[in-house]
Length: 377
Image (cartoon, rainbow, N blue to C red; front, side, top):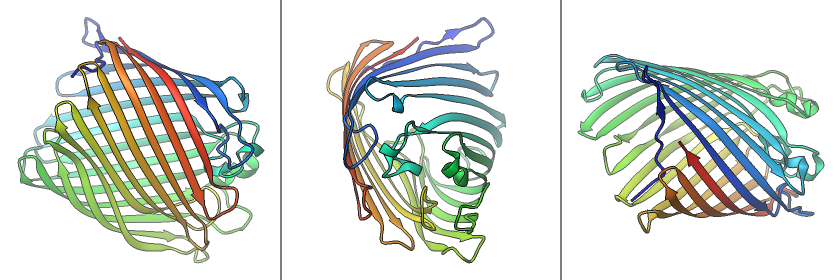
């Protein structure tokens, strides 16, 4: 099995510099994600970036920047330029004490007909743009091989839209995130996890209904984790969620919740990914909350040393509270990749999206075909 493998430039002081670029040519037969009057277009997407990494002692520092620019030949309303900046630091003070900091800045977009513009893609003359800031600090106590260890997290997230402010101003928010987990090792590569999470979400403006969307989310989970050296890696946890709105005019949620993400390395050349989650989340349009059910199944297989395939299916069901609306979205993807060199990969991809809804003008079908070139130093 071969893979495109980075070989970063290393300075005399030990700093690693890794530039990369991905180039994609694709055809989208429904660029506005609508159920009628669809428009198709070819597009090219260029994603250059660079990662800088330092590993002094037992510590690690990473800087990552990535630019993504999409140009639609027959639909310039869908052109976009996105930016991602990531800074992180991890410190290991001794065997029992470690800490880390992470900051992400994202200037990105929603495709027409998704998110806030769900069902109204043709009504927009450009994509909806927004920015996010995410900061997280974590501290871990206890040896990684110890019977028990603790981890604490403190995070902040905000989201602010840049255009169509007559509508989007009501979806700007900031959120404080708190978390704590206890890991109890029951086998060399397996631990039980007991986790508590709390997210305090506050919106900048109240919409025309005059009813605030501010809420506090509480999660309590119990589950199992598998270390990265195991045949199965990932985490599976189940528990309880309470979504409590700050106003009594909105219906709160109390109920079952789960979050599972697993990878099974069946063979050295073949692996399977499985994921599922169920929780209540805020809607982009109307309603108090959405009960979201999500499934993912994916398979990657190397048929030859340089030839691999990826096949995946995902399903999302959104059930709106206080409404008869229910959305079901299936997405199928298949790709074939060939590693021409250590640093160069070419690929062919095909994606099908089918969205059905009990609400009018929400459902649509979409087909995307792509040719890609991925390069690293």
